[in-house]
Image (tube, rainbow, N blue to C red; front, side, top):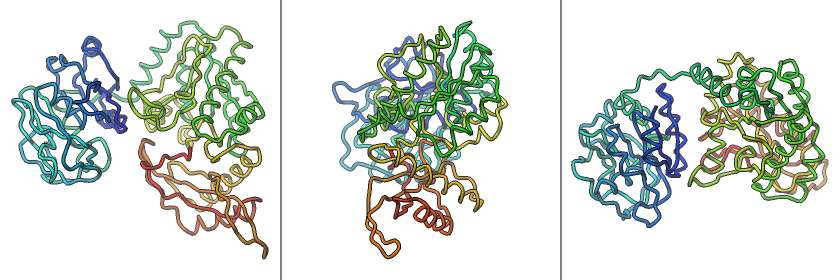
Length: 503
């Protein structure tokens, strides 16, 4: 296992992903004591980026004793600066800050840069920099404005890079992580099959003979979570599907048809009016998410009382949900209804999240290992709060109907045109109204936005280049078939700076 110590940077989740791509297990933790770190027995440690400055009074630093553990340590950005400060070097504000793609030149021999091109593009994002490396460190890379872009103490296997090798913009990043895995002496034998076996065994130990209620949305994450629990506790599992009235067109019927065939003690709860009433007048995205998150919990609590003595609530929370909801000192991007949207009081003994440290593609792999049908495993992601976060502004029954119909048209035409490999695509309703002309008359109606992205991990994404002919057909159908819409837009923004969903 390689341990990632998280100092609050927004790319930190990608570090774990890059390590796992090398078939090495990786855990992310914040603010651990030295004793806890030592007890985890990591083969290597990675110190992540973060928004602080190491010379600030309350800056978060790793325990100094980790440098006496005898394991390789890699510092990235803020992590590199933290290593420098602790080991006696100097960090100060940079006269020229670096953001974005920057050419990095390797200027010294290094195990970390084995096979790496002498000059390549890397992603920089820093306001401070290392001015003086600690004793026994040599500089191994530089940029035009950053003389110490990388440094190392090869005798102790301490390495530091000012750039971010975990992001796709760093061309040689994958090689750097592979080299670090080799330096750590890891066996590269962690596979999803072992994750499934270990997780099932751990769930058996944790739950014992207790009753479990699984929040089943019909999406990939909750379906895989349900399958894991079914293996672990069998008949003690009840799966509850809440139709909150914010699903895609015909989705509630489809989910019920699929999952009522499985031996999961499937229960469907119709709660559309209830959720709509709670959302009346609410326009702020975070409030929407938190209201929906709390109402889900209240429905589950009511069901648990009916079926009797439920100890555990299972959610299909995955790692991007945790990160975007704010992990440790990371910024909150958006509170996912099953993480940051949870109410303060939850009437269950414990919330169980068996997929909490997995990325979306890893969850799909786990689903295949569990024998779930490919139709479920490959299903398009759909947010727990549903169409509420694809409607900008207040949610109303009329707006829900518009988004459902527009989304159905978009999906139908994408399928008809044979457009493949879209990671996620959907229609959303903006809060913009604009002038149009229909039937020789003036209109002042809504604008629908279409979104399509390509991504592996859903932490970064690029806008998909859907053929113009397809978008043109979709736009014509939407404005002709849906009353109240006179304009269709296509969102061509990547993530970052945008998120995949609109709210």
